[in-house]
Length: 415
Image (tube, rainbow, N blue to C red):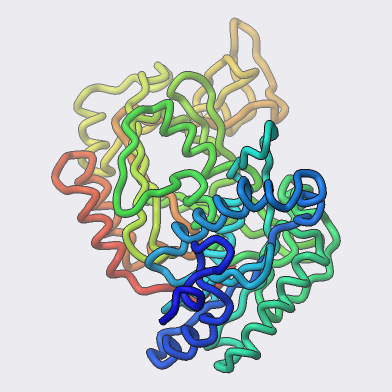
């Protein structure tokens, strides 16, 4: 096969449009599911006008195509179909996986700085997604569906992904929508989580540990950045796509650093010890493991060593619940519930101006994953709890946890 068919004639980096149909028909025979992403670079003509086509080719298009080639490696192929238009063919994927890859592509482009003359230039992409199993097995039809979806993405504000058949009627700009937690279409939670995972732990394949608490917190802050609750409109419900799992299994509403190695996850005070990112299988199986160091007891509940040991033997850890008034005074959980306490000799009515806190006075651990992760399985709850306890006690490894999760069935797509 001649090089002019296999490779983009201009840069010799990507495959050419001539090869796309050939590849599509060859791999379609396998019947594993194909995904097609049609996308272009937003506002490309103004870049050519400002810097000239020659400069943009050298400083943006060539490095972008190399980046694209690396990103799609082992997952499919990338094709140059025009000056600023490209197509990616993904092999053995369904629509969720294709959409997850497309969003990862856009995230990578947004976070890349291209050096053009003396300027730092960022680009955004508009992309359309179609799949052969869900839309059509005919190459030309599938390409047209993806192209139409890409046109919808551009018409609706650019810098976004639209899948074929998606009805977009909202008009908010993507950045404004993200800040407000307003979304045009509820994302599947595993896709949402995978996008966040990739941005917080780029390049992670398999299991990678982050034992420096400061770096761990930086990455957790990226993973759990706002918005964590998404609303389509005032008439629909709220989607909380990221949850934490151990024996409480709750959605995550907020996350922030308090000081040093201490963070606040909703009402849980956590002293971060180390974190592991796990990306060993398909996108919907990835998760983050978090292990924390113990706090000093609050002093509100005098406990003997025997009592603490009983808690650990029974639950795997020992914790304390208390109320924090005026961001400085600790009161018991009972006083928090009664909304009043004696403080410095004065009986204070809190009038709701108090926050619940939970801290662990022994080592603690948990998993962060998508709401629709396979981990969300009531039959797995006791197994997960035992695995978490064994990890704290050094009786098992995270590899065993990853193996257990990999055997869980994929859940049906939902928010």
